[in-house]
Image (cartoon, rainbow, N blue to C red; front, top):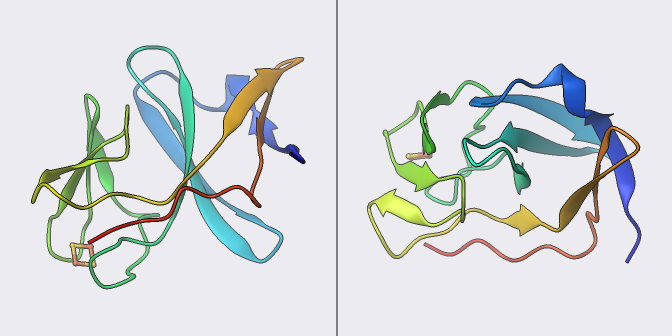
Length: 109
Ligand code: FES
C-alpha cells in the first residue's frame, strides 16, 4: 500500500468535505460526523458527474446532477440503494489525511 498525503486534517471540519486533484485523479475528502475521514473518487457512480459541488448534510452526500444520495460513513447508496461510491483506504498520520489511490474499492450502480 502506498499512502499519499492529500491534505491537512485541519483543513476540513467535521461534517464538511473538499475536492482535490491528486495524480490526475479527482477525489473528495470527507470529514464524517463520526470524526473519521473518508476518501472517495469524485465521480458519481450514476453518470460520472463530479461530486465536487455535492451537498453534505449529516452523513448524506447528495450529487447535484440527479440527486442520488450516499452515506459517507460507508460510501453506500441511500437513495437509490444498491449503488456505491468508489472509496480509497485512508488514515491520518501526523495531521495529514493520507490515501492509497491504487487500492480503490470500486463503485457499483
Ligand atoms: S450523475 Fe450523480 S445522480 Fe446522476
